[in-house]
Length: 330
Image (cartoon, rainbow, N blue to C red; front, top):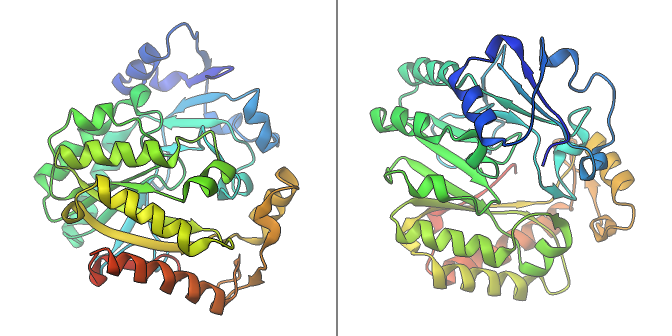
């Protein structure tokens, strides 16, 4: 999976680092000082990840938890995301990471105890805070290597007012199924119609496989969330989403879906430049796009509203309650 594994010398004996190394069989690590002296110091093309992807194992310094932008999550409670890793093994053509970091090389951070201490401090001020994993890396794709979920489960079992969201496109749910379902922990999946996912979500599990994973979690009693995000316009948009929603609700119990977020494909100027360079022939460029209210490049307001209303009506007619549906980053 990784061309090289590099680890900071100060964390060699950290139990989480040792766990990762034991799960990375037959890969001898290279010992370094601070990962920031190497990772991204020289620009590495994003698509070089296909042939040469390195892993850094490090201690996260500085800010471990950040408040999310407005309209990031549901409800009125404050939302935060915590930083457990950088970069992703998947290759979604629209992914913002290709224009965010100077390298596609991955970083696993091992100091989860420090993240949990910050969560503790935040919940003293905001007992009902939401904490999201999966902003800079898929929260489950490599969990069979990092294996840290039980640490967070312990925290959220002791703090039932706070909420944890694991955002993913992965079907790597084996470690989740070993845990006891909690009312305040959610596993949430990004879903697109199968033809859209096949075209743009490179290297990810299929939509059918993700729904199958959702079904297993539903049957085991876990709380779930669905992100219909990013939605990409096509001439058969309504039919595609009607089929997707029907397939989802044939396999997942409605009452365990806590929310459904709706969002359209969107880019910052720098990300859009990288997307055009990396995937010059992609149908993503069909647009048409405008510069929107937040300086991001996305569909026009009338187009977005039509897409949102179309999918919202499909959800409502399928029995999803209106209060469970929200618009993401709008």
